[in-house]
Image (cartoon, rainbow, N blue to C red; front, side, top):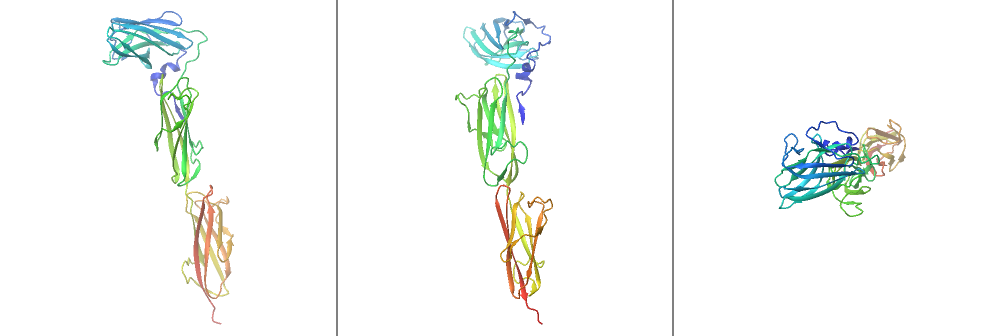
Length: 392
């Protein structure tokens, strides 16, 4: 299984170093206000090509951000005053201008005033800046760098987002070939079990199959809120018709979290069983399907040979050769590995002898067998000879 809970450096850069104090130079300005609480001024139109979020060039001050940490959660609240009216998006960046997460949206009224308050999991020991971007004209307004103080020794470890998918074929978690053996033409059922392995709910969960496309039928959303909550498992199903030979498909799940996108994938396999068998019957070495066949003197020995081959794609078990006149034929050679199965590369040769009669003769050789999952196969082949009485 290949699991990806961190797509890029963006939303997760601060998770991996959540307990480390960054040493990046922040000469642009760091604002601190004591353990667990920080205040930072917000400046207008702070776009910077090297750091598109801004990081607070000291232009016109249009507000103040207050950040309070409590047991791993940070609350960001404040007010913009004198800002361009419209809708603003709050985005948190680290000290190296890497986007971390989107906190929410709020509106600024016609007078330029707008209040905001958002809460999120934030790892301690990091340096940040907050960007307030106008959704209409794209203008950035941001703080200087600020660092949230510790919320005490009892603060939990940093939360994370994660997702897992396990793909089953007819109930078998067949990550490797060949997977379960399934009769060609029968119904195959794929099950995709999706679990939230992180600490936050997941939105926009999408399951796809590289052969079947989007898989939409599922159960497990116990509270019906359309979110894959922590502790929930969603089970998706899809069916198809079994194809012959080796088959592989890949189930993939994607979702969104407050920390960014998460994804996982898992392959599954089956082998489509299409058994077949062939028998060729010889009389004294001649494949005499039609009469009269070879001339055989009455009273002489006649030898029948039954050549059996596997013409399907799976080994065959319980191989039985019979003659409609001579009965069961049990003497054979060709089981090269002595496993009692007629393998794909093997030819089994059965022999039987009798005494020729002085008249035309016909008999039918038949072979029956079955695949490892019980699929029956059969074949038959006639043979003839012309029995004659020698002149004394």
